[in-house]
Length: 398
Image (spheres, rainbow, N blue to C red):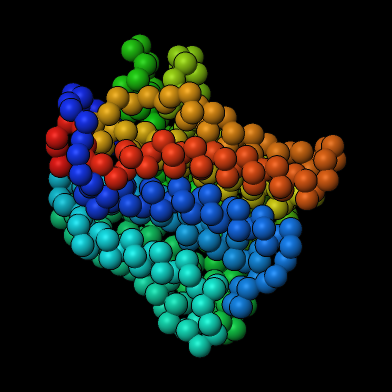
């Protein structure tokens, strides 16, 4: 499988002037993701410690939906709107169309707080975001010669179906919200597996002088086959041996990938090791999912290893790297961002493993994990706000 670059640093010039928030997709959506990663977690913690309820969501339902269809989807949108242009050479929305797309995403986040009379309107607004994103990406993906990139379109369609399933229960029509959340998690994980296979070997080869990431067609086929078998068996035969075995298979093939891509020097480069750490959480998460299938580990904790761990850690690293590469800056992490990379992993450890030890109460674990996560995204927001809103330092468009 070929590896795909995501932007190269240019030559530093004079400090950029003016604003370029809507010059390319990663800018508004990474900023929205960072702000929502901070705000949604603090709101979740506030409401969880002193439950007041929502008009249209359960508290856990709102938290699950917003971390997936709000926070995570903003990162996915920003990444794809940027990467697809880079991969295909065909423009994706910028300027006013991009601002409108970002505004559509933001309006969907207001749903739990609007009056009952407006629920239907805001459900529709939230449901429209993914079709709008698909429309924005369809032209460059379909016109480009590389057909493999078109796989993003059915993945986004799966996410749109997942959002519909969630909202059908939220408005009292069908009891499908759990299925929607599960489908969205699996869609994001599949996208993460697909994208990491395309970009992480490239990142490693570019950052480490004597690195030689290995590709195996048989391994990649096994990765996708086992993941799809796991997702299907987990849906049809939960808490049984087949999904346990397939979860083990996913963990083993992901570990095989990391072994083939690994080089000791990656641990000297935080902007790279954070991505490897995210994929380590993918391995750990599926090992824990296998244990959960036979009652040896709490399923909700295993799920957080995949969501907060694999998705949360990997996407933080991707945002940090992509934003630097596409603004012409040197690709690296300063001490503040290294602290953020460490904090997000600490947050996942506290959320996933400390409850099992019973060293701290469950509410204390959730509180500490949420605080560590929030500090991480506060630091990211402070460091990356000027990067995301100002023009490229090399004078190029984007």
